Length: 228
Image 1 (cartoon, rainbow, N blue to C red):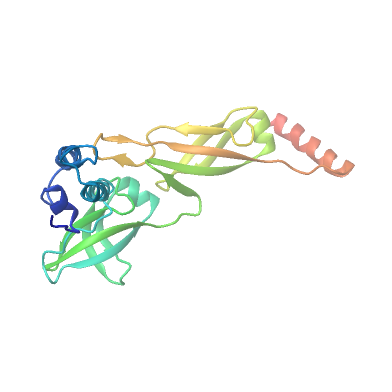
Image 2: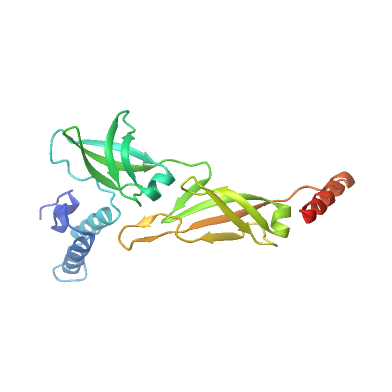
């Protein structure tokens, strides 16, 4: 049996096949070659499964059908992953090109682009952010909160994942590691057209009050906050 390293060839689908077509072909082949069946082949079954996982997770770089096609890496910020990009972009290779990247693009996804008559495949990478991280379609923020705000509640202004000012209400009695969920502020799932959420985990700043002076200052802060 001929063994190919091309996942499309292994599953018997074209590179333009939809994920549903890929899944259907995988199920048919996996059923046929499962080691428990008379027609089974354990080595080929493993190859089929590996090919499916590569295409399902989009980790396989598409075959470069033209000799001058160039693979380039592009780091997207959280904002760009949420909103998409349709602009001149700078690649990791040190040159710029015009590209349209859809909202919801994630680590490891590949997009074909033509620029100035040349063909490129863009490999998506993620640009780290000082405040936000990603988990699936959700965006994660660890937020430092003053203990008095946590105790009494209050409104604070934070930066949203798309770099806009966002008013956030901290409930009175909030504790360390409590979290707030803001729906629809994460990445877009292009298949379901639904967005992930923004998960804000609170990190309450608890002061050390080990002297009478520290205690007195803290009491003054509480009284001043009450007057506000």
